[in-house]
Figure 1 (cartoon, one colour):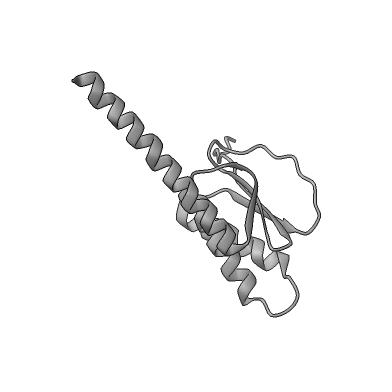
Figure 2: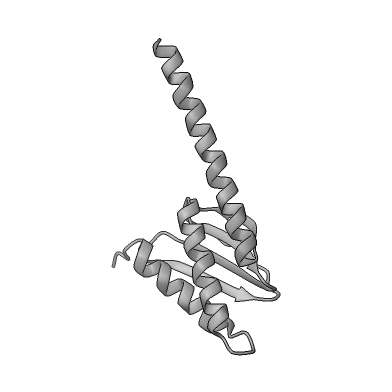
Length: 125
């Protein structure tokens, strides 16, 4: 009976994971988001997508990439702790080191966004 209960729990977790992934894909389609590379939990990804979409929708006409990057950085610094970095543009290259679970590279409309977290260590004099 114990083995059957464990199997039931395993299957339940698996199905819940599939449901979460399906909901995430539906939200991506609604927001016109495409994930390019990711090492970030779904709730944080969704926060980034919503923040980016809201900022883009509030911009009249031309993209203000600095404003979008600053808004994402401030949102993540205040919500999830310091040392978030954000790069926004239509064409850029990068090579970064990030904290575990703190990396998201995605596009929304024709804008590419790289959001990542680094560890903060105090300087010793």
